[in-house]
Length: 297
Ligand code: RIB
Ligand code: NA
Image 1 (cartoon, rainbow, N blue to C red):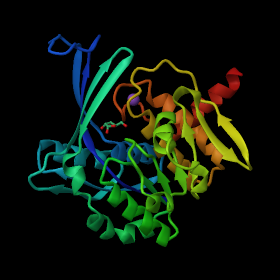
Image 2: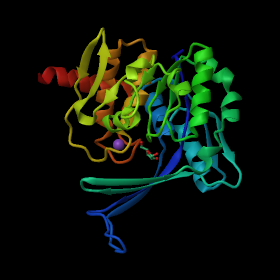
Image 3: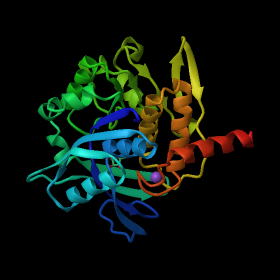
Image 4: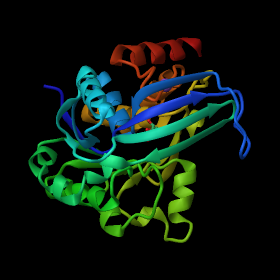
């Protein structure tokens, strides 16, 4: 039995428009391409981990619209257990309107049904959280619900990974129950510019730096695990692939540096295909990519 990862988080339909340039204020332009593809940080991370062979359980909410059904079917097709992904009446499914232009990506997320993942809903899944090795969290559901989930995990010795995206103020009650904290540079700055050093919290901070890889501290020394330079097609969801892969590697007891190297490779593979989930690799793809990198040196 693979170890279990539970994601309590968001699921969105991504409405992706590709265009050569952004329109100016009040301007209409002709774009290049449009696609409707499953996304949402929680769902992306769940799919990334499942594709890498982990046993993944998703707790979330969709709308009772046409996107809700499609998103639920998609999660099952990707091998994620979706028993606790339920429709809510009279709410739209979460959407992300994404404009991809050269050098300039812009995203508007409307959470919709994701806001129905309340602390009460989370509390009703205490057994699932207790039964998991890792609980993987992001910030596209209400922060009180994220806090509740982390509290339940701590109560049952389930390891908590928090990817603080999209960034917002975090209550100490949440940070106190996080084991691995995975901000990017921008999120880390935003979170701690007016506060004490993040090292006062008990979590281990793994800062992601895109193609530059990640930084964390071990035995009082800063460790840099380099990323892999690739020609990106679409960097949407690169961080999600990293987080899902990190969780999958940690359930397999990889030491942290190896887990980060592995997750960097998964992320490098994913950005070479369109869509947040497009290009997410399977386990053998990551191993082959890493072997190839070693041989090139
Ligand atoms: O991290 C990428 C995701 O952020 C997209 O799939 C989109 O849904 C937004 O939530
Ligand atoms: Na991709």
